[in-house]
Length: 81
Image (cartoon, rainbow, N blue to C red; front, side, top):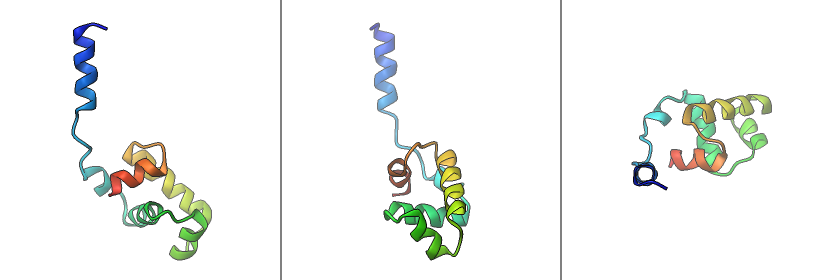
């Protein structure tokens, strides 16, 4: 590996964590769903608590992942914290 490539790899991993700006882009409902996901709630429990359908929770979850640029509940919860 060349020095230039090695430097870029090190710089990539030394970047500051993402700002709260990504979480601020969520709608109020998406924020509620994310908060419950971060607590480890199941989709059915979230749907029951918020009075929405299971598929609606899945839609919010998908949009949250897109806005936060994450692939899992764990990654989303880490950005929420």
